Image (cartoon, rainbow, N blue to C red; front, side):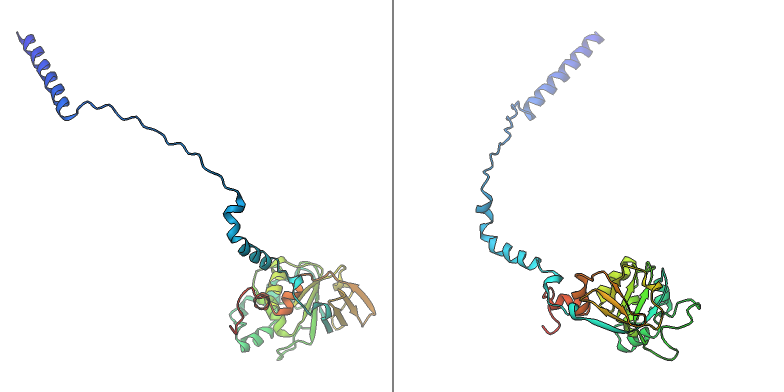
Length: 258
């Protein structure tokens, strides 16, 4: 009897659930899902970009502008004066110690003061100082160095200090890359490379001439001439006064008068 009741209740519950399902969840066959297919039409490139061709041509013309295509005074630039000779691995702390980096080169008074400290960090083994005491300018317009000149930090104050002191060019056997780039970017000094160790061929106080067009250094004190490596496309940038002045000159950025 009990088993019969249990079977009956199970049967009733099953019947109720099926009838409930039939009321609330009518039997509906799921729709078939169709995946769309695409057949893109590929148009010739010329038909899609032809209206913009003129714009592309004008941009290409602008992009081909190079320093060598800009008029420059490099070929006729000549420096003449006394040279100051240093050795290898002259770092930026020796060129301008960190304690003077608070001076702002864009301020004329501080620019001149920055120059008065140029090469003040050289060791005491250099008997002749680059700038005499109580002076702000040097009498040595050309610095001659050995290998790896300008190594150390990336401070752009290093070439700026030399330029502010009155130096026109540095001639070294090789440079730290960042010093070379900062010299070009600021336009303060010409970083020229020699093919021989001029720091062993010249001495401080020799009278020399640099002819950029001929890539040549003449030591009038010894009567010898030396070949320099061409300054190349860096020349017009330095001639213009640095990277921003060069960009204004070539129309890459608006001039200050506009």
